[in-house]
Length: 575
Image 1 (cartoon, helix red, strand yellow):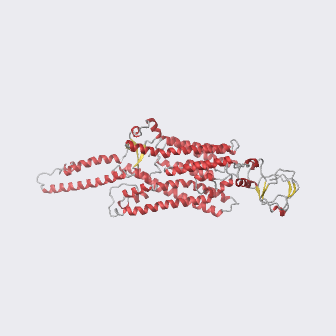
Image 2 (tube, helix red, strand yellow; image 1 turned 60 degrees about the horizontal axis):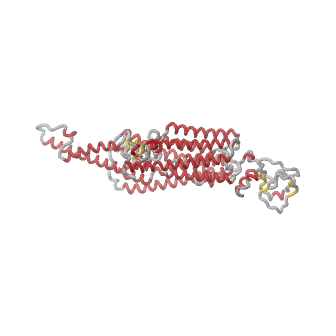
Image 3 (cartoon, one colour; image 1 turned 90 degrees about the vertical axis):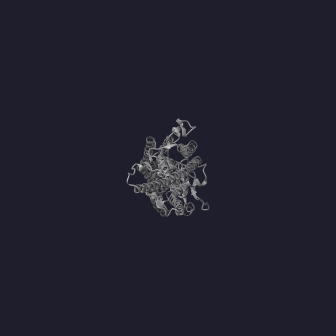
């Protein structure tokens, strides 16, 4: 490092072997043979050495590469003027990766990754953590990562993809292949076990009065009259709940990786163009397949069909359909929690029956029936934020970054306003915490915008990012623990629920009526509906035979009704 030393002059000895040399503002003269020993000629901004004094050599070389020339300097006796590198923006605004910034990145990455994993195991979404790390890793945000690191991958984006450190193209391909392999294994296990369990029911005729939605999952469930057995299997293996949760976790990472790959592809100096093209193609196909077919058509359309079927039929044939039921006595159900606290902390209803919820109800399990379609709002906002945060316009006018960050703030504010107005979650506090997470993400984006304009220091952005990630992790703990506490209290205090159109209540009424009719048949008396037309004198044995046939038909109908009720009760009691 000889930069800014105007007293140095002459030629550098050819015996000196260096990789990086800084000779701006010196009188050193280079001959062509000796200059071949110095492949990296660097002009550093003011106070650069002071800022990088406490970082590792590897990180120091990465920072140096932002100010490197590939051509030799002119040989002259006059001082070499310090100029900006050809491919760098304003070099005085490039942030230096210090140990404090590295610790902040590691903290945010660890906390957001833990939050994403907790969301996956709890059948919840990890959109809040993923949007936070995406904004912190945006090229337009004044953050601790350089554009080179953002393009080649960073541990900051670990919550989006476990392959983020390998680069954007491999993150897109890796996420897609990982999801396809795991979902394929899930489907294979379901198909294998369903054939074994449905074999005893293969020759049984399916019930004629079964009411169900015309969906892909419904047609498979009601095939060969093995609805109960297949629903049990789906509930135990959490299909398609587990697959849908995995897709919603990995899709935002694929979207961000596709955008980063497009940025790298637009760079004329990019040497991995084939990998970027492959990542873009695989990522686009994967996102369209997951979002439009798997999650929407298989999971949500079946849930929506179940809800509409229950409203339309209102009979025991819909006892296995998913429906939302209100808690009848929440102040007794959630004892010893005070009523005012339970009204905010705990949900006021739940999705029943449990096997259907465990099988395919995770997409709506956090929402009430009225706002069940609201499940798509936060995931779509997450995808939009990934696109806006991934677009690299750092080499363009500052207004381009201002526009992208402004659009990001508008998207987050719109989603937050909708959640605050609709309160679509089963528990009020759940909606409030989602709004709080969105507010923290908006503040982080705003600080990044202000830092880029010099109004806020980079340490403030990194520090608030750590605080926001920890707060979101605490919020996520509530979303994970709330259903567990609800199930424990319902199991201890009875779990009495009611709904506007509840097949369970119809089951109780029909069961009592059936018992009365069956008792009359066993005593040799015909039911009221049959004995209302008494045989007249002179009809003799003909009417007696007709009455006996009617009794037998009634008894057979009662037997079928008893079997249907037994199957429905057994299904509703499954874990």
